Length: 446
Image: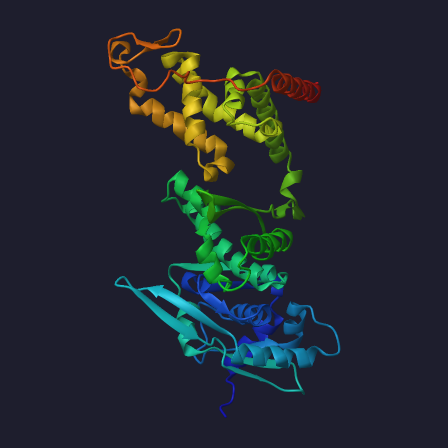
């Protein structure tokens, strides 16, 4: 058996003394999107072992060294049975755990099945654990120039579900790209938005989490794989994550995640101070809130809000969402004003009825974006500028329809393009809600 060199001993000592909170895990994106055929413990142990690799000076024999104390601390194990559990985890990792990796080679995909750690050595008389990676896994861990992701080992240590770990790595992969291009440039604003609001097909997420045959009921899949994982991730990691189900027709086709990073303590005058305590930051936050409340108040008094309610594009419950209403006032209503100057208020209402009739289920969570896109396309289409004499206009008469400009009369009976179906009782309730919200906003301003 070959002896450990002095260099290896020094390296081993450094890794043992390294704090877990400062460790980083660096791996290729193809490994992150692969199928992890293993439970949470082997997967966490693999991540811990990766954090021991010096990417600038990778181990030539693919071997890293761990401390048992460090390993038990990582898994938060303190009972008397911890050594037996450690042995069982090693056996599980070597006998059952592997990655199924799919790599795009241009002409097609290459598929690999890799047992990541085939060799582990330890004894009962010292603190040392030797871990050797399989040669086939090393290209996904070292000499990474592009398409790789780095995340904090401390985040992984807090996650107690295989699905949480897999989803966290995938979210990190996307958010890392957002941070990189936000700082370096090279991407448009909509591309940056896609990185921190990434989408994934449900079928792809099932494959990645190895749940094609598990949780077949959609409700169970979202509850146990998606929702429970996001609760853990938002509670224990650097991220806050929410999600939306995006539909095609009645089926949930894909998921869109919304990732934001928690504020980290910043050093100020030699001390660490939360960003929220910084006066400039707080003043900017107050200014944004005041501006948002002003926009909300304007939206509550706008005729466009009433039109959206009457066309069922907005509900009374939506009106209680300050952010939604402020964004409508800021981004959508100015475009409706442009449209009104061309076709009049009734023309705006006809446009909203058309949008309501054509609106698909998956556009509901993105109401502001959907309405803005719809009216922009309408304004840019040129249809609003069509000369009045070239349009066929119809007058409603008793029992029949008369064409004003002599064009062919349609076979169907005349029906107004805009119908207000709000009942008097509903209208009173809407007015009551608007008044209560408006009074509430005035009190806040005082």
